[in-house]
Length: 425
Image 1 (cartoon, rainbow, N blue to C red):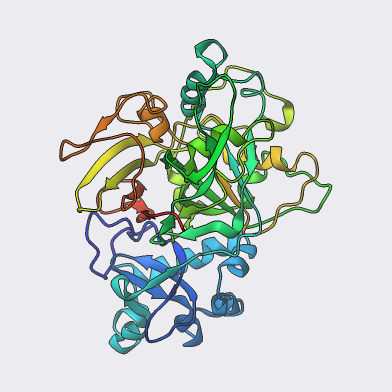
Image 2 (image 1 turned 120 degrees about the vertical axis):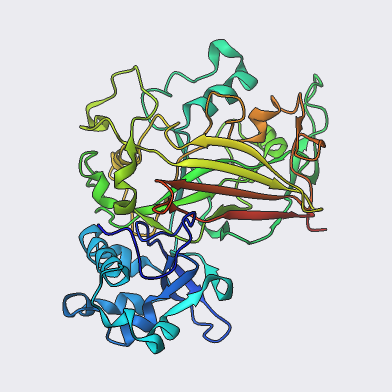
């Protein structure tokens, strides 16, 4: 595949020709949400391109999928079609192309929109959202805080991918501001008699995760085989599972998180196709337990070698990079999550979103949540300006970043950013 384009693309761009992630955009001139791909500093308007009749004959038959307001119809076409579209776009943007698009300046002006002029929207109509707990390092660290080192991981952890069902209606695209949630939290967690008060969350946290969108579902009663599950993956986004830790501590027994997690989940706007991530397969965290047969994969490079970072920006504009880690720090794969989710016959649908769970490393500075960084609020951490912090304050912005590959051919996600506003009165 050619990785050099005739279009000027900065070497450090997340959106090289090797990537071409898909999203939904609008502009001040055309406010209708529509599909596009990101290439360098531009959004390539697929809706206009398809209406111009610029797709080749084979692809133009299905170009109606680019006249929709979400990517669901395109996703449902399946991975072979996604591959053909991406390869076609790569071919017309490649340096050695003979396609008319390279020389037609008028067509370029209609199709290539500066990203600075674009408004991003949620890329998919998300029917269901399931957040997993596949980051073993995070699971262990949190377990130590709650139960001690001897019982950090529950007995089921190595046998199945644990998850909770989240709220799809509060999933928002990067850049959306988040109100601090209100809820019940303990007056004094150390008191013998536990009693809550209703107030704004005081222990607000982020969680660094990878999100996965499905392109193919299954009929109710028909599980998806783990060895075929890869074909059901549309692509990936960054995901921030905002967490109200003090509310969570009071409500999670016995059925798990509820209002502590349902107020907001932020995702990056561009879906990196599964094909674009295939070259970056890598080994994840080894599970020493022999899992049930329906969870056994036939490959060892099931994880993704994606470099991940988290920036915290204060209201005064000071930015600190507080986490650097890698998506290889997962113990369960997305195909295993799909297989387990459907083993009962549960039907999945195109546009369903899975979260990986918090991704933390074992090295200093590689933790994916403030819960871990502060040891449950027992210690502070230093920012770039020397200030100390434990949890998120009003006015703080959290930005997740991630990319794979090398200079000039990065496959990245762009930013996944949210800013904290005060609680509603």
